[in-house]
Image (cartoon, rainbow, N blue to C red; front, side, top):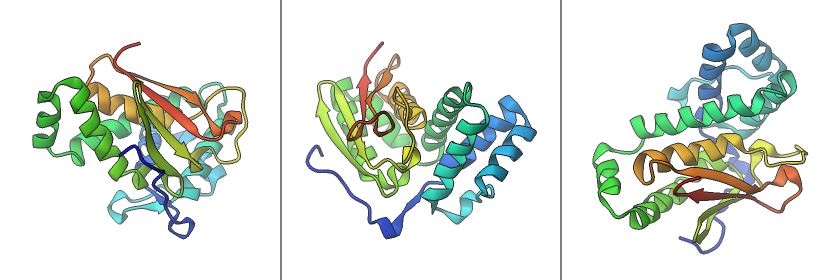
Length: 202
């Protein structure tokens, strides 16, 4: 699926709860409850119940922004940890073990295509009202247009640490053990889209 972008209607602007719940778990484990409570209070968002399904993407964006404001020097590392944890959650609960085994059994280039296709089909869970596409295969490249988690942010470098880490964890566990995902363009840095290169190794 490397055709056009896969859009989600703005009226359906929702995203998977892991965008918040895994970050909350990381904050509790790494920073302590006080910072977690501060971030959630500043965001004006309650910790979602994953059993209730998708959440407003604005809630996730508010929590990520509140973290960046509270601890700017540590936020990117914490968001990366939350993204890795989200990838692990997906592997435990969303991708059947038989499917994981099948992807691992394939030659890596084919396994990467299969996994990339599955990610594209479920992109609404992490892109929200943004639009996801597979933009290339050499290297494997993903693009998210209108990424809601960095909407309105401005910086001098890519800032989608959570997304990059989710992709990295999935590909490292299922395709290339030494996989590295680099964000080479970002809307927060003034680019038209957020672009991620999935590399077999550093």
